[in-house]
Amino acid sequence: MKSLKFLIITVLILSFQFCTQKGKEETRVRFMTIGTGGLTGVYYPTGASMCSMIDKNALGSKNIQCNVQSTAGSVYNLNAIHSKEIEFGIVQSDMVFRAWEGLEPFPEKYSELRSVFSIYSEPMNLVARKDAKISSLQDIKGKKVNIGNPGSGQKRTSTELLTACGMTESDLALAGSLKPAEMPDGLRDQKLDAYFYTVAHPTANIKDIAHSVPITLVPLEGDCIDQFVESHPFYVKTKVPGGLYDGVEQEVPTFAVKATVMTHKDTPDALVRALLDSIVTNMDEFKQLHPAYRDMTLASIQEGLVPPFHPAAKRYFEQGK
Ligand code: GLU
Image (tube, rainbow, N blue to C red; front, side):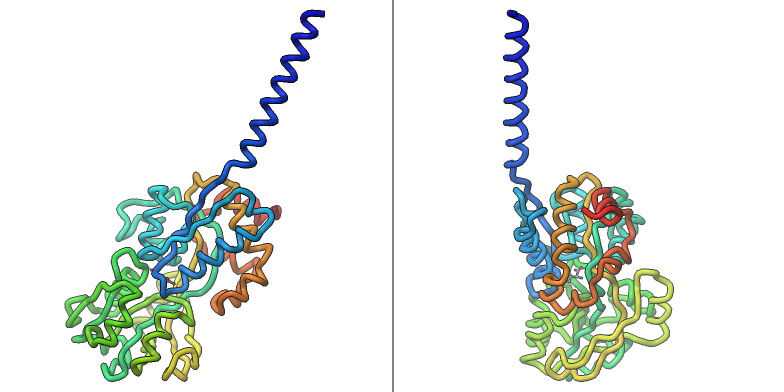
């Protein structure tokens, strides 16, 4: 009799502990940060939109606090994922490839990187003052050109492009490293003749400068660029539509990367699943938020990714939630 009493009490205590433990798990707030880019680009509003989708989405929202962080760009984001300072980052696919392979500017192979999904095609742009008379890539010789801020994707992509086309920074009168938000002022104040910016369209950054100074988007085409695109699987030719910016009426040929979402292999499944589900479940709503997302489909978001999927993303794509 005594031992039966003891057994019942033990069972009661254990089940009470189990329930409170479960309750604790459900109420524990999990934090996640999405690293993006400069405030005037498209990564930052994209990260903000993702967090707002998570907040709204029933499956994802429970106890997840999503923060968007403005950063220097792709290279910064990859380094911050590597060191586990942030859980997610929006990153150019050419920089993902470089990090995965351990190519400059990355010190080693970032083999813990995992793919979550890809978002949109992101063109390389050369924005120039009209009076700088730059009508092709070769015309930047002897000009003041912003190559890109440290930590950005454009700094590395433009450097690789110059090398492929037989140029170095020493061919320029100035190789600038202003941040995206400072680049329009640089052009306006004639500190710059042109700037490189890997960014989707339309972007507040180029709208801003096109309002106040006549600009051109320089066509990036010709033999060395063709070869550059053909020799790298993550570059594709594209055209920036005309009519998006004051004075830029014609479509402009260039090449593009993919803007992708990366994470660390150790990121908890629940966070990856919440982010992915909030986008997949509400894709039509998400696509309304920026023209760059227009072509997103369940198939397109699984393309153009270098590292393997995070296990939670793999499961999600294979089995649904
Ligand atoms: N592609 C840029 C980078 O990696 C950021 C573009 C944006 O902020 O929209 O630095």
